[in-house]
Amino acid sequence: PVQLKTGERADVPITVGEEFIRSSKPKQIMLVINCAHLADGDELAIKLNHRKLSPLLHEGSQINVPVEANWLDLGKNQVEVTVAKGEVTLEAIEIEVVY
Image (cartoon, rainbow, N blue to C red; front, side, top):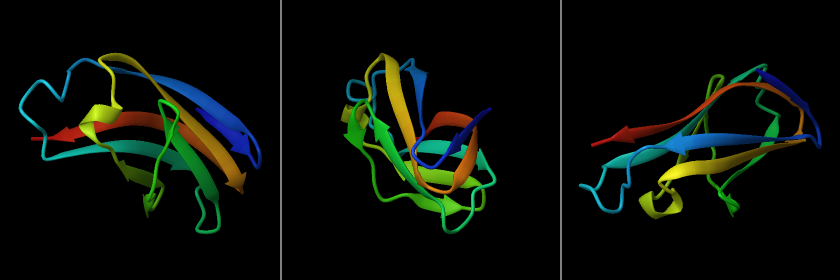
């Protein structure tokens, strides 16, 4: 887990083992971020491979961000999470794919 306060950023590598634009197109791809201590007033800025992501769908301590297949690279990808307001603990980041 990584604890972040206002103004702090975490760079998290995430590996993708499938080339989604070449395979059968998924119905949905979601970047899922699990946090502890995520409050309604907290504000996060999230980037995937230097692309700003929005909107942020927040359900309890989980943030779900829709992602397009062509935004992901086969192999290493970079997720940046910056806390604009508040304090959170990042517990897990993953790509969720639905076919």
